[in-house]
Length: 191
Image (cartoon, rainbow, N blue to C red; front, side, top):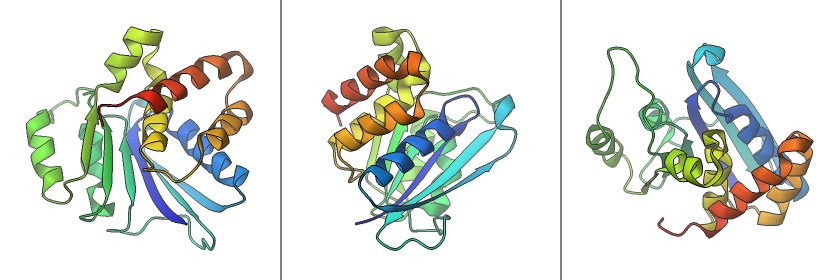
């Protein structure tokens, strides 16, 4: 198994936590994993991009251009920041949520048009809206998308490995809520 994953979004969306969960789930399955964080003003809502490489032999933590298997974008406009890592087979799993950027607000249609130039494997989910209605906490949208990615085999790790990782990575008072959001993502079907 080899998997190159990019997660992108803005600071405060839990991107580093998702990186840690995927890395721990990989370790639960005795796989080699390397990770790297590339971010600007993440504490002030700036762009964050993380790299995760999983496999039997992994030497570098960085996903090279055109080599991403999966790109998870927690904000739709941020998906464009990961385009350089994509190829025609790359799967884009995108939270259809826009955080306004001064002077640069693209429509959903404009973004989809740009992404379709690279890959036809684009899945938009209103994760923030779905999670806010169900759990009143949009920060859980990343874990929800992780469950959806796992259920569709976009990530070749078992649900039980992710659940073990959640226990090790998430603060104790938030474990049950995160497990519920993950399981909700596993059952989510409109992908």
